[in-house]
Image (cartoon, rainbow, N blue to C red; front, side, top):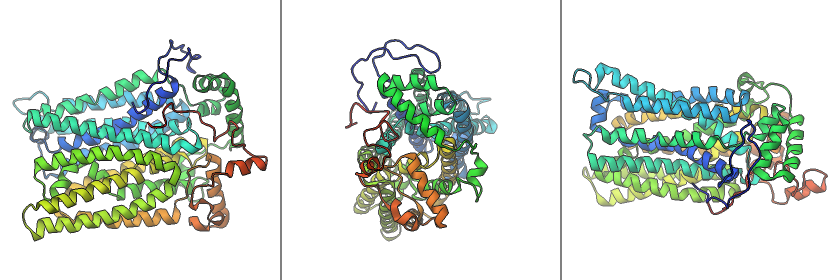
Amino acid sequence: MPFPPPPPEPDSPSDPNGSSPPKRWVSQKNSIVAFSSIAIALYGYDQGMMSLVNTNYSYLRTMGISGDSSMVGVIVSVYYLGCLVGAIIASDWADKKGRKRSINACLYTTVVGNILMFMSGIIPWKSDNTWRGGSCALMLIGRVVLGLGVGGIDATIPVYSSELSKDGARGRALAKEFQANIGGLLVAFGLNLLSTRLLGKESQWAWRLPIIIMQVFPWVLIFIIKRLPESPRWLISEDRIDDARKALIGLHGEVQADEFLDEFHRAQQEESDEQIGYLDMLNWNGSQFHPTMVTVMGQINQALTGYGAVSVYGPQIFELLGWDVLAAENTTLINYTIYFMMMVIAWMSIDVLGRRKLMVWGSGGLAICFALLAVLGGLALDLFHEPSLIIEILGSIVLVVSTAIFGICWLATVWLIPTEIYPSGARAQGSAISVIIWGLANFAVTFLTPLGFNYLKYWLFLVFAMTNTFAGWWTWRYSPETGGRSFEENQEFFVSAREEGSWVVKKVDGGKFLRMPPKQQDVANAEDGEIAKDDPTETAPLLEQHSESG
């Protein structure tokens, strides 16, 4: 858990769904933080798990494929197709049935998908673990079903979390959750590496145990979600005012609950009553087309950084730098450990430097790192024709640095922006579109990367250097700074862009959205009769964390 539990507090009011929880030793606020973090860690666990499953000899025999078969990439990447479908279904449920019920359904779906993966070829049929192709088919089905659940979670958790966080700390909250994502990746890879060392690459349990251990995540989340409140914003949108008040009392106490309730109710009434659908978001003339394109390109550009491939195929990438299999796996573990630690810098900087600046700087740094890796890979494979310790060490340092850059600058930012630029009626759909594009982009990257290993070798790094250059240019030109502003303030950018006929950030509203707003903006607004800095508005916290140090 990223935050220590607070002292015991009195009984909270009834849950919005009608249940009366017992006396609590962990507050609702900390439960929400823990829940969101574990849910995001679930996705990271899958990435770390598959990175060594792909190289297990028993797994390859059970699937009836070779280590260099394109089916290795298909089994990994088909999961992302499940994710995009799950995101669509879950976001629809999140709007119609509530954030909690949508997430709960996704958790049970994840349980089923994980069991199907574990059962693939577990008992030989006529001395054949491949089940005449059935093992691979069941693994593919399991990966898709798992993707349905995890994709739905990824679509709803950022919305749920952002609706319970203050404007000045939304980035910090989500970046902490994504640190848990890397924690999940690290735990999975560590368990996988331990089981491989103890049991060997010929043992089926070396790959089955890390798969079934994933069950811990959804079951813990199913237990926690029973005590969580529904999003007060969603409850207000459904005219469930009393339930929204109960949820706010459980989060923030009775006195401020009424103040928050009045403010959220006013904000809801000010928004258009028009139902916003996917066609309105994808139609060129639709009111939400511009923010949707910012969302889409953010996810495409994140995929173009190449770090979906590094997360899933870490050991193989270190082998391209000259390490043998054992050393590559150990170095990957070190890389993931540093990755996890560097996420502290991410949540410390994202609300200080802003989303846009981090992404632009990050793309530049990644482009330089991948260009260096292409040179070092060429030296290792073409010049020396044998392992060179200096090249291996230098290449590993560069790859670790690039991993840190990605974690700090790109991991959380593109997930945060969609939760900040849409009105309430489109926030869940916007988050779903983000997951859909993430699924399609990562499907392509994780499917093509094994082919890149086989045919491009170290030239694959040069490809990523060029794609990072493009990602940085697009972000600099078209992606507005959304940090430090309320949801409504961020929508002003798109209104101004429509009126001025330009999407170029520096040309919209005098370049106001090139950077974070001045710290005194709230004071100025108060002088104009708008939102006072200490008023219970969009800028006031719903989730005040008990530990700012994490």
